[in-house]
Image (cartoon, rainbow, N blue to C red):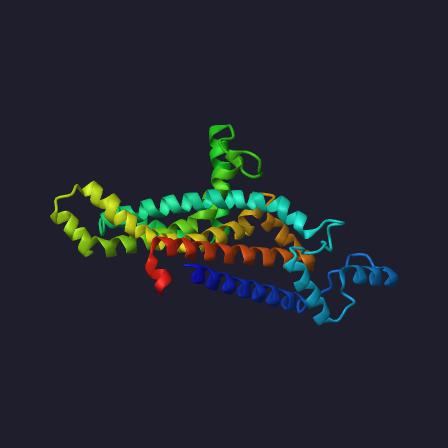
Length: 310
């Protein structure tokens, strides 16, 4: 298990290095100038700014300094937000995105397991047909469309009832979190439902399930102990990347619902060509995704020893 863990950690470090390198050189190929503003900047002030942010150095030297800084966990100073470090932006805004993502993944995991098991039990019957139709919609419709529809539905509901059932936008209370997290988790819920359904249908005809039925075990015990428990394993495999994807992929939902998360700052940084914020958040998101994948791989290795052997 130790060699398996070290191998996965080494692969993770190489992946993060590749993400950081690709992000750095891609940002320096983007047209535009991060120091350009609406007003003309005097040449001496411009040189001072370039010296402050290291833009007056050769590209390879900038790259070396960038790698040296991120190994120490320092992503630099924002170009557009005065005297504010990227580390401070991540530390202050990421908990908001993480809270939204955790709620979304709870909705997605519980819904995916429940609906997937239900469709397998009622295969080719009305519940299966209805749920799979909704699953196809959940996979096909983009999150920004779901977010807009959810917000419009809330506005209509509040207007009809004459009082606010749930807030339309903003952040701060549990009520503010419910609809955005549900909208954010719908796509993942649909994917997990399909995965759970396929896994359940494979296990229904497994030898140990037929043996359990031949022994006369209650159907509820066969379902929970033999079918559901084993069918959940593939869901656990994709749960780590799904957590990272939801936590780091709520840019549009955060913008539509006016949620002050890290994704919103990332979108603003792209619009303003804030190199340090873009590179810092991209590397942070990439490292977080790699960490979650490794964590799930290790967890799966404990659950199924065959993974470590292979």
